[in-house]
Length: 97
Image (tube, rainbow, N blue to C red):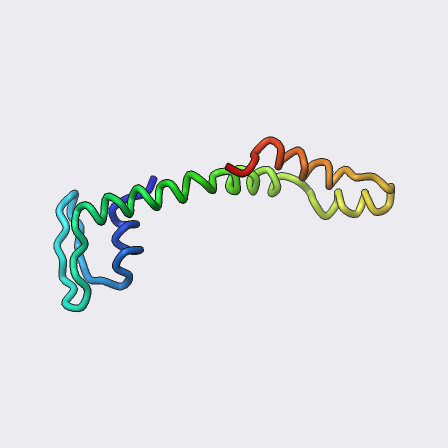
């Protein structure tokens, strides 16, 4: 889940601030403090971006579970498409948003 901290880090990189609960103390003399609306909008934007790439994280978990080098090697020796078929099945299971 995206938080106010994430929003602060993207809106005002390297800014100096302290967040205590929901209370933001701004200590940066160079960058201006973002408004509550700016922070809320950034949290929403970042969450949408994160949600839109969920399929990538789901695919990666499945890809990591495959012994891909062995599948590729076996396919080369046997003239099969086991690796390709496994990858296509994962992509079908977790399509792009």
